Length: 552
Image (cartoon, rainbow, N blue to C red; front, side, top):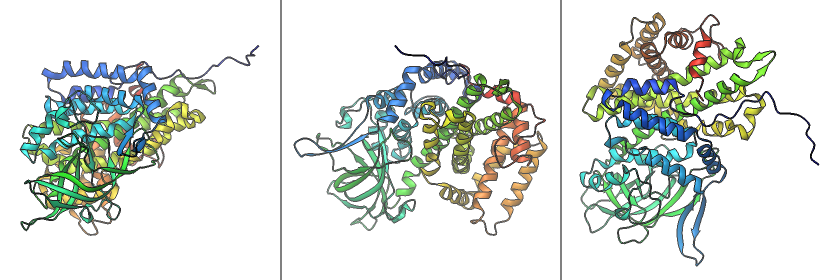
């Protein structure tokens, strides 16, 4: 006969069966702010339905299973034929299918598509971040393909389809297609111009044969890949060029795409990241020879925004879990959320999360505007995307760490889900160019594209006069921008200031006064310590925390 030692009490209930979208005031307000009235009701209904799906116990379980059953490489079939396939747990396909059907690859085809997609991406990343990689790469491939109208006409309808078709067949036989990307190589890393993969022209115009390797190739079971290789042209061109590599050729045979191994990663375990070899691999040129970086840069910019969105999503889920836990957990005679010191920690975390979400969603709105021909918004993106990619992704890990600590020992245990968030948290800072790459890209924009800085200053200038600490920070930033001595060595410091001023300006304009006041006092006014939970005690911290509480 089983014995019972005690009844379980004073434990927070699971944060499941809630609307991840509606339960996030910051995200819902951003959607309402940035979408046109004629599409707002439809978008809210879609996002709320998707939010309920994401918050359901069943889908949360899919996320856990996909993470705990990582992909496996099958190099050969039972007969010894080379197949180079990656097998995924069924939960992976369920998650990816839901993401595709929710429009996470269809932003380019719908009004307000980037804001709607960005909000859905934030919602879905909170379930399991790994499936965000193929969704992001597929979404981001569109601007690169548009440099070749014929390729875009062929591939864009497949990539923006809301039907998930994972079978390996020629792309023209599929209801929808996914894309991956291969840029980096062993010897070059972020220095993609050091790539040694060779592209030899074939008889058919625009087609090539690739020989070489890719140290990191994302989403290796995709239908196509954008890769960089050195073209050897008989016409006097050549140089680093962008290519489209289909996984399956038009006649049904498999292209030469040898998966050497899958990377063993710190986190992102549900997703496959591969090392691949090309040996006589058929490819189609995208854009002009020697213009590979310029051709693929649109894809890179879009994925960098997704890095900021993904980091904001991880921060939001970590903060939601922390606030939820402290709402129910009692210690020292009362609820944790009512304890002044814990309230300070939660409020500080909530500020970080809100600022990240507000910035990322503002950039999504800029994408929508740029698609309609707004050149100011296009210029704004040129500077603001690497700024946001640098700063938001950098703030993710310390935010998740502190949020985990709010759960105490429970936060260190796998069952809480917090360790999975923590393992994922550094990824977005590394992918698509780590911190120094982003900082140097900001310097390039400042030095070569003055209209980008003009657009940035117009954006933050809209908030001038509303908070003296923001005004002071803008003045200090202008002083720093005027001094170019030793600019590379202090690039990170400059980018950090650009990010904080932009976040402060957005919160002053759009957030409740208590949030803007707390952000400006701490991040811009200097009334802050070096760890979370060091906000001025005179602020209305209870209201800041309540705003971050997920509505279950």
